[in-house]
Image 1 (cartoon, one colour):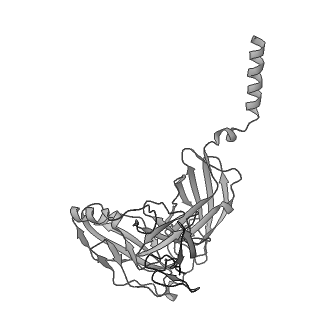
Image 2: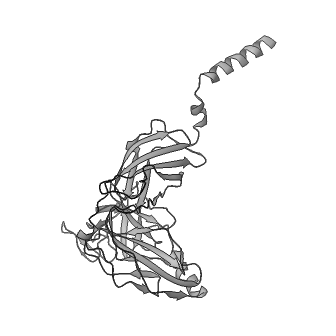
Image 3: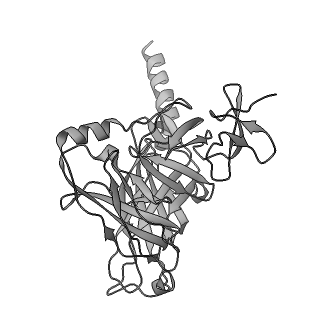
Length: 330
C-alpha cells in the first residue's frame, strides 16, 4: 500500500512537471481582443509628452503609459512618438494565448500597433503614433460662443470649419472634474459629472488630427447650488432597454471598424438601442453603431447614414416609418 501511494505521488509530480506554469495560471475568462482610446497632447515644436490611454473594458485595467522616445528638447516635425502601454487583467480574466497586435484596435489619436508582449495576467502594447506635422496655421480650429444650457447641464459652442472632432473638459472652480473627453458634436452633456455645488465652466478646442489642435477656449462660469446639482445629475442615467428609455452622458469614438459610444462610466451598449442627443441609435453585439434596417423585437426600424433612427418619414428605399420609428405596414 505504501509503495502504491509513493508511485501515485511520483506520477502526479511528473505530470505537473511537464505542464507549463502559465497554463495552470490561465484560469477564468480569456481576453481575446482589446480596444484602446488614445488622447495625445504631443505637438511638433513643443517639449511635452502628455498622452492618456483609456478603455471601456471592465476585463482589464491600464497600469502604465510610457512615451519611450521623449526628445531632449522638443518634438521635431515628422517625429513619431512611441508608446509602451501596460495592461493588467482583472481578477478571473486572462489574456489569451497567441495574442497578437492584430487583436488590438485603436481609436482617438492616429497610430498603429507595432507589437505586443503577453503573459496571462499582463499585456504590453507598443504603439507608434503618426508623424507630427507643424502646420496648424493651415487649419481654422478656433471655437467660439461657448454657452451653458442651465436646464440640463449641457455645454454648446459654434461649429468649427476644419475640426473633425472636439476635445472638451469640465472644471469646478480651478479643478478639472473630467479628463479630456472627445465628441464630434458641437455640444456635450456634462450633467452626470455635476454632482456637487460650485462654479462650473468647460473648455473646448477644435481638433483636425493628433498633430493639429486649436487653442483651448473657456466658457463663462456658472454657479450650481447643491439642490440644482442633484436635480441635474439625477436626470442622467445609463443602461437602456430600447426606444422609450433615456441615456447617460458620454462620447462618440471611432476606430478602424466603425463608430461606438463610450458612456461616462466607460460602459458601452451592445445589441440594444441608446438615446443620445435627442436621437435613437442601435449598437450591434460588438458595440458598433448600425445603419440601415434593424429588426428588433419583431419590428423593423431604419437608421440613416448618421446612425440616427428615422421617424415620421420615408426611408431611402421607399418605406414609411411612424413617430416611433417603426415601419408602417400597409
